[in-house]
Length: 343
Image (tube, rainbow, N blue to C red; front, side):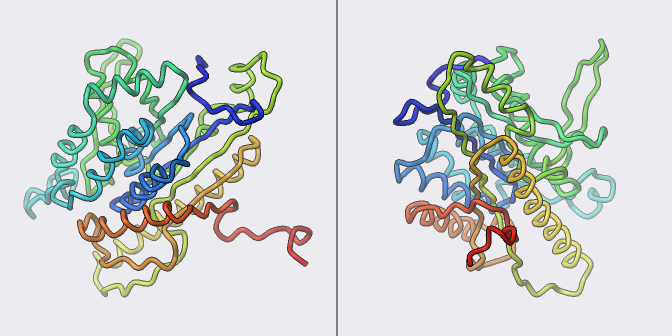
């Protein structure tokens, strides 16, 4: 791994500090994460992250979070000035019968185009060359496999289609199956050209980290063969949603029951991912931290992409950061072994 000192931090005693950020899926609840990141910037304590990973709405946040506080205003606008009409348009009943989805995501494509430009890719490419990494996940639905995309490598590739591919991957990562259409990505393998069908990375996981991709201890030793001091690693997991049960009166109809069941499955998937990341962090000697929307926050509406609610969540996340983020260091429901319980 090519690496420059600008890609990590140096502690007061000369230790090397690697900070990793994992941003989860969560639909319009990404407004909470956007507010928290921006509030964290305002405190002056937000680190430069060696690696940023994102899934679904987290994938849309990730490039701006990767580039740091210079893009805080763009991040704020992307979650506080939009509503459902900026994300999708519903198909009519008859077209829906033979369509691959219930909506068109042309508005979301336009929104991604607003914030992801050639200039943004040039900046990401420059950080990639320093040794920083940006990864996004989508799902190859044909192969039934998650795909991890090295977005810095795409940005730094110099290929004429790099901007189109970068934007497509972000769209694919956030394309909820059936609700949003899949994204077709051109592939050339063994001399044959074909198209892969990609959908939301959340089909496989809501969050992932660098340890899902590489053997961290081996990579770090290879990057610093002469360094004999301490290497400290921190993983920050930003969960754009709740990890606690939330009560909602469900109407007795197929749409309401199905929607509630699917959203509950996504929530449980997110909790399972926090456990997986925690256990992986322990194995790699990485300090684990996570935060999520607190249990006492009550949304004003269950509707996704409601502009008023997104602004409330943004402000709430920002306030939490300004007050000092209370990072949790063990996953939801963790029970310490008896010998570790307080007497």
